[in-house]
Image (cartoon, rainbow, N blue to C red; front, side):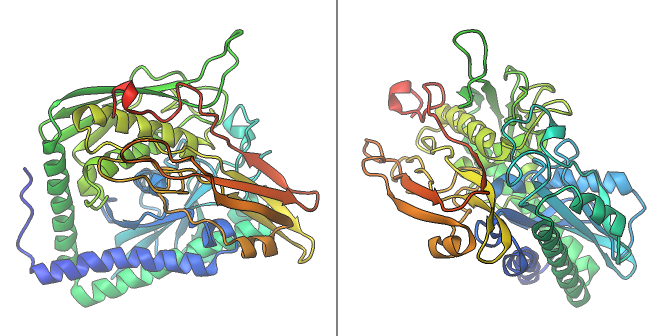
Length: 491
C-alpha cells in the first residue's frame, strides 16, 4: 500500500488540488464559449488537462472520457519531439494516432507553462474537428483503407513559436481542409483555452509558491494511487477472460466474419493487467484502435466498474498496465485507418472489460450499452451562406442496467459516458438545412428484467437541400455484438 505524503497542510493541499481541477474547467468553459463548431459548443467533444513538468497527468476535465486516458501519450510525444527546443509562448499541435493521439479528427493543442524562467507545467486541449481533409465527412471516411485516405496527419509541430504566429504550419493545415473557417476558429479556440490555463497556473504558482504546489501534486497523485490500489484489492485475485465482436462484417468467403477483440484481465493483489493477446489482426477499415485509444478505453471500463469515485490522474493509472500486440485491432501498425475507433471500437473494448470483470464482481458489472447510431456530416446553410459540421447525437440508445439500478435512457455511447450533449433541435434547424421530423423515445426498447436497460430514441431527419455530406455509423446488433444478458452467464 502506498503511504501518501502528509507533510503539507491539509487545507492548503485541498485548495491547490481543487485549483488544478478548476483550471481545466476554466479552459473547457472558454472552449464552449469561443468555438466555431457545434461539435465543440454543443456536443462538448473535447477534453482539457494539466500536466506537471515531469509530464504527469495532474488534473483534467473529461467531457469525453475516451480522450482522457490518451492525453499523456500526446504530451510525451510532443515533449520527446522538441526536447529542449521549448520556450515561453510556444503552442504545439498533434493529431497523428501513431504519435500519441486517439484518431486524426481529435486534434491536440498543447502549451508549455513557464514560471520564473523554468518550465513548470503543460496544458492540453483536445477536441474533434469539423474537418481534417481526406474523403470523409466531419473527419470520418468509411471508405478509407489507409490512414492517408482519412485526412491530414499532423506530427508534433508549433502553431506559435515564442508567441509568434507560425504561418507556414497554419497554412499547411488550412489548405488541406474544406471548412477552413471552422477549423481555424476551433484551433484558435483551443489555443485560447491553453492561454487561459497558462495564466491561471502562473497565478497559482505566484500565490502558493513552487515548493507548495509541487508537494501538493506529489501528494494528490500518491493519494489517487492509494485509492486505486484499494479498489483493485477488493477484486478477487484471478484471470478473467472476455471476447466481443465489432458490428462490421468483413468480406471473408461466403459467410463473412466480424472482427473480435479478446482480452484477459489479471488481478494480483493491488495491481491489474489487461492483455489483448489473441485479438484479431488489424483490418483495412477505420475501426482499428490506436494504442493510446485502447488504453484509454480500458480506463473507462475499469474506473466505471471498480473506481468511479477516484480521480483519473497519473497516480490512479500507476497500478494498471495494458498489453496490446502490435498489428492487431487494438494496436495497429502505422498506416491502418483509425477514425471510428473512438466510438465503435472503444465501445467493444469497454464491453469486453465489463464482461471480464463481471466474472469477478457480478454485482458491480454493467450490462452492455447501445453502441452507436450517430452520424457525422457537413452542410451549407444557404440562408446564411455558412458551412457547418455536426454530429447527430439525437438517436442515442440506452445504457445497460446494473445491480439495483435501471440503465440511463437516451444516453451517448460509452466513449463519452453520457458527457456528449444532444444538440438543441431548434438551434440545429437554424444552423443546418435540415428538418427534424421525429424525435422521441422508442417504445418497449428498454429490455426486460428486474432492472431494465435504458430507452433508445427514434429520430427522423429530412434534408431540405442538396449538399449535405453524411457519414453514418449504425449498430447492426448481430449475435456476437448484441448486448448480453444473464442467459449468457455473464450477468
